Length: 126
Image (cartoon, rainbow, N blue to C red):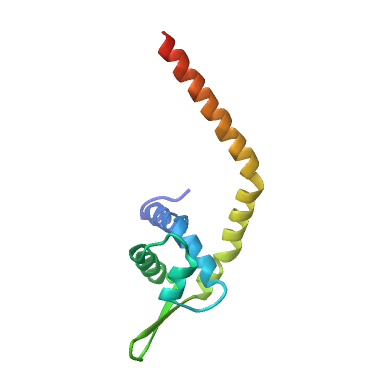
């Protein structure tokens, strides 16, 4: 059991890591060092602002390194740090679990929706 501020820190770390954009950025950076624009093109649906915030948080937490090359225009590249690379196996395990259970989760969601609909209709009749 975690007590004191350790629990608060753990929650903040898990909130960041479990963010959908974080996992997509980490998965994209697993392959190689990537420029910001290329990273944005490789992650469908992410806005420039959300990518910037995600990369800043990952850099702050030590999962991503940012390299600025002194060129005109400046070239900025991002890559996973060793700690960031250590996130790949648990992230893949979580993704594997999700893929394995998609049919059961979809069936459960459909059954829940049916029950909710039945309850709603019964309540409207009274």
